Image 1 (cartoon, rainbow over the protein chains, first blue to last red):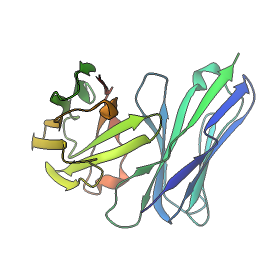
Image 2 (cartoon, one colour):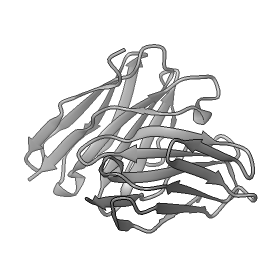
Image 3 (tube, rainbow over the protein chains, first blue to last red):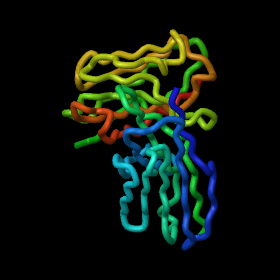
Length: 111
Length: 116
């Protein structure tokens, strides 16, 4: 079945450094979503990408969808302590299939 | 809107007991999802409903797990009998739209289940 892999599993950065997490799918995706889960919290939707090569920005966050629609990335510029949490990608293959979540990248930011 | 509501927030039970988790989706949403989250396995989809009808329950681990959605505003996930390996955080999420799989999911706060 469809698998979604995320790397790295953990990332520790100094406040102000950049951070990137990568998401790779074993199949071509029709769309990909990104979620953030704060420690002790629940996943919260950040964004959805649908088009090949699509790039979207939310303040310091930049999301990309690969040309082949099999990979995606989330880049945070100049991390802040408020960025702490686990970032999940979730992809859906074509057809009537549900979202498959990656295992997430846990980000720690050291002040 | 109050968001997705789950109860209880915490549940501690002994092995062999029946556990029932409850979820109230966001009003107007026609899709509901049950997930289980553990450190080892991450976020796993157990089952999802569309217009109160179960669409795919292939993620339900075994016959001990069952889920129902008797109406648009309520769903339950039952584990009977419970086992220590069922310990996890269980999330309910809801979504809207006819092409529901393309829409963002709104997660509830989760139920932390501990089976001793």
